[in-house]
Length: 291
Image (cartoon, rainbow, N blue to C red):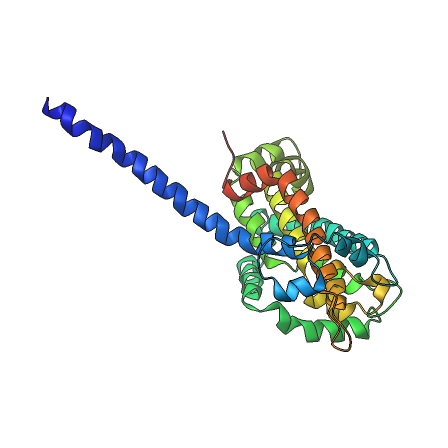
C-alpha cells in the first residue's frame, strides 16, 4: 500500500525533467535561429520598414528585393555565385588532394626530421591568417599573379600546397587509427608506398576526406578578407565581396536587396551540408576502423 502511494511522484519526476530539457532546447534553438529568421524577414521588407520595424515579420511583403538585388549591378548576381562556386569547389579539390598526401607522409612514411616538420606544421595553427596576408600578397605580386588574367590563382595555389594545417592534422589523426597490419599485408603482396596509399589508405580515408571537403567548401564560400584583397574587377567578385557593394557611403544603401542576396547565399551552404551531413558526423566521430 505504501509502495502504491510513493510510486506516482517518482514516475512524474522523469517526465518533469524531460519537459524541462525540451523547454531549454527550444529556448536555445530560438536564440540560435533568431538572427536567421530576422534576416529572412528583413529580406522582404521595404527600405523604410527596415528602419522603423525591428520585428521579425514584415508589415508589407516586398518580394521585389530579390529581383532588385539580382540585377542591381552591371553584372548579374548569378555571376558572383558562379565565381564563389568555382573557387570553393577548386579549394575542396586542392585541400583534399594535398592535405591527404601530406597526412599520409606524416602518418605512415618514415623520413628524417619527420616529427620536427610535423611540429612546425602544427605550429602554423597558432598564426592568425591575417598575419600572412601581407607576405603572401608581396610574394604573389612578385610572381605576377595578382591582377592577372586568372585572378583566382592567389586564392587557389596555397590550397594545392597543403597549407591548411588543420586538415592535415585531422587526416593524420585519422590515419593513425588505421592498423599498420594492413600496410604490412600490402607490402607482402608487393605494394610499395604509392600502392599502399592507393589501395589501403585512400579507400579507408573517405570519412576524413568528406569532412575536409565540407569544411573547405563552407569556409571558402563565406571567406571575405582574402578574396577582397586579391579580387579587383567587378566580374571576378565572389558572393561575400559582392554583398558589400550594396552598402555605399556616397549614396542610399540598398539594405533590402542586400539581405535578400544574403539569404540566397546561404542556400548552397545549407544544401551542401544537408547532402553530406551523415558523412560529416561519421568523419568527425571515426577514430579508427569499424569492425
